[in-house]
Length: 182
Ligand code: MG
Image 1: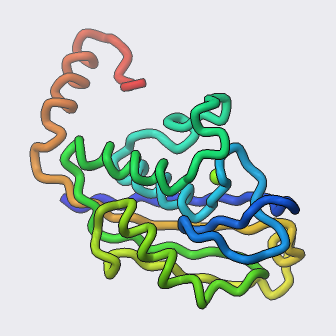
Image 2 (image 1 turned 90 degrees about the vertical axis):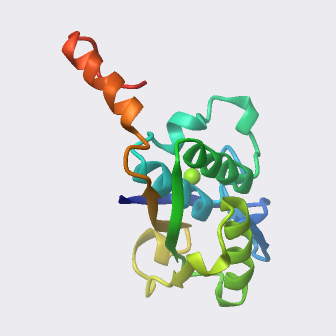
């Protein structure tokens, strides 16, 4: 069975921080503000992967109240998410993504970002797409107040891979207990 997930993230620019996108440090006068390295592209992809297997979201797995993730490398967090999917029998088929930023221009960094992202997810680089668009000067992103990223992921789940999980939730349902897994 093929399952799809989507993700979105947005961060404000903040001077004095390095700009990290897709695990690549990109020369720019400002980086992104956030608890971790604020790599919005990694975060959008993580949410897409988690969404594909209905396993919550980045805020649940990496709460910003948890000091472990303070200034963490988001590429490492992405590696952790890919490991979660693997453990539950889900194989990443492909990821497509889009960075929405007025600046900086990202074309020359796309190959590097794809390689880093593919490495973290353990998939061939031709399964990972990174695109970029400007905002024609429109809105907060157009005024260069921050940047955003969107991602879609598809994963293959072997038929019956989640049977045990489903059975236990059916049992819970029959017993009238909560069906939520968290
Ligand atoms: Mg984020």
